[in-house]
Image (cartoon, rainbow, N blue to C red):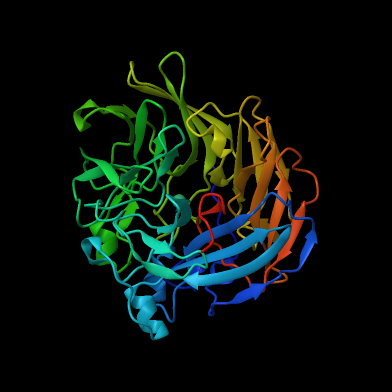
Length: 469
Ligand SMILES: [Fe+2]
């Protein structure tokens, strides 16, 4: 376990909110820029959009000493690549009632599960079923965006989503479905939902999974056989609510941590719960079934989170990269640390989703650096070796998105797209790296017209999947 408390992160309640300043600080304007300056050569087969969502509060925040990073208004940043050029950059708030009011616009329309229209999706953005979706957990309805990132309105999968959704659905390339484990406070106080969405963006299955304590279930994993449920150490906290914090979830040392294997064709009563050591996990890398009936999942594991840091995820412990081998027959989990450095925002070659992978890619989480993130790591799970691309002492890379080359054969034959922030220059660049050669200089560096705040998740959305209109 690594505990990091940098000099730049003074105790909360007596200092500015770490998550509203520096790299996390919001930008104030929506911009459109064309023909972005670029160093190097953008691969010509990259035709589409790099997209990224993250919190960017509009206007002043009420009670900044109680404001949690996860509850900032969503803003999507996008860069369109085509014909070897960076054709445009746009950043747009995802319209919610609050954002629309602040900008003097009409609020967006559409269904609104649990009356959450005050907060737009701020966590992920992806292409699916020919559309661009902004996503959030905890019950917020997905929002459909235009190709140019304007909000079109909330979309509950065309009237088929009866409850909450997730910011981290998993795509099954064989069935072309999305699978999600969803929670919603206060709508689902004693259960989670397992939701399946077909390739036409229609919900085809919802299963109610009973759980105690109302855990925060940020992500899930999927294999050919199982939907994997992470019932871990962060749960609903009335104490946190009474203290006035706007995110009512906290570390719960009394919650029994476990991982559940729900057979994809089974009922909730078929779930196989396996105990694990106390921990929290936001993000798994990938998961797959083994020939002997076990399940392997690699993930970023926190010893504790939301314990002393009540405003965000960075100031308790740094997450290590671990491998869990789950034996459903024995009901056990073998936990093994792969690398003890701080790893977050893991990605992998999407062609290896649900299959055995060799490589994963993460953002080094090192809050002693002014960019919060540091190097981009490549992990070889076959050898345990980690190779890195470093951006210098004042700069760091966020979530590394892997794009396989069109004719690639090797698993690591592809590019990594990484948003890089340089704290000294207060500037951001999108770097394109050769994943097979982490030490090499970037293939291309695309200069942005403004800083891109540290956000959450994004996607490479090729024009072949979501077409420009
Ligand atoms: Fe996430």
